[in-house]
Length: 170
Image 1 (spheres, rainbow, N blue to C red):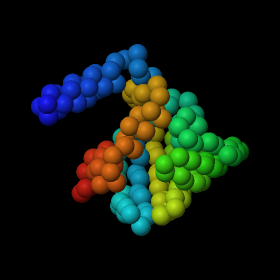
Image 2 (image 1 turned 90 degrees about the vertical axis):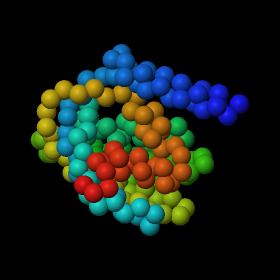
Image 3 (image 1 turned 180 degrees about the vertical axis):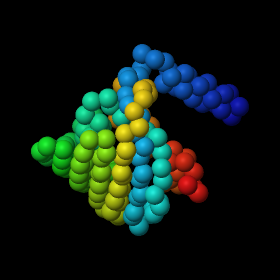
Image 4 (image 1 turned 30 degrees about the vertical axis):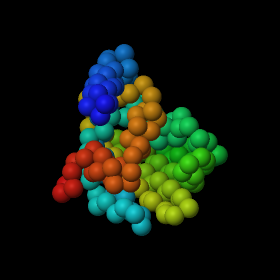
């Protein structure tokens, strides 16, 4: 019984990976270099550098759009003036949180600060982006992709985040 269960999980995982790779499930984006650090009681991650794919237009609005699409989350305030966007998001459910987002875009650079408060912690995520140019593919539904990454224990999520950001030593 245990072997067939493992096989089912493996087959399901392969199907998910295959479906995520289909071109019709993706949209065209633009490559950016992101330097990101995270500070909190539970996780202190020094700056990591990674190449990311952001929307070809309104790249500075990607975090806002992702927040709007998350289950149990609601944008309570979004203000955009020139190259600066400030937003607040409230999430309810199993892991309630309050998040404040500030993004400043200036030509081919962006700077963002996201502060998320939960009952037990406050996490600050700072990112500096530089547009690299060049085409890339991103999921049509980035919120669903982000939700998949948020599953599992805290240790599993930390490990996935470190892998995404280039490993522990970068």
